[in-house]
Image (cartoon, rainbow, N blue to C red; front, side):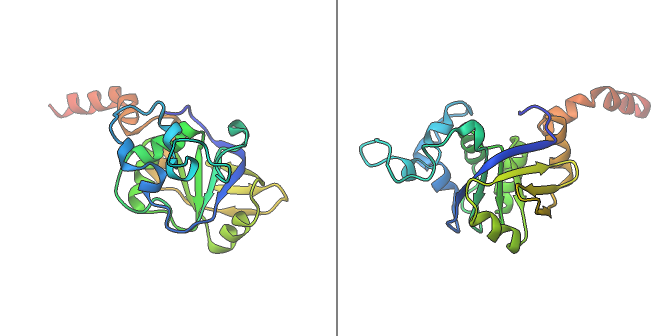
Length: 192
């Protein structure tokens, strides 16, 4: 799980396509591992590599400094398709810490939150602004649930409360419970 984080600041990478499904994020043939490490290499594999395994010249996902571009702005209905935790694992390992869209599939949102990737749904106006401004500077304040754009424009968003709490604390759901083990044991002892 990622470290506790309240602010995400980055330039954006824009993939304006609607209906980017989990098989596009990470093709099924790469789902043979149970570890997260190294999956960034195969994120959007069929968009980034040709049939011979060579990097494509026209891929929108290569040629930028990943440490400066950790926020992905995607078209509507992002993360649709089959449920696979490998999709947020691949995006995180690729270097993304947040995904913004006007619509994100519920199962992808759930898997993302459980694995330290921040999924944000914004209104259509904010989404249009982000889509037409690739590379813009964005700051996401998770505590106050506000996105600030480089030109001073802002928009609000909501994240499922438990997932938000886990991200703010830098834990996954199991880590959240383990952090509260003394209170859980005290509760159980009082009831036995």
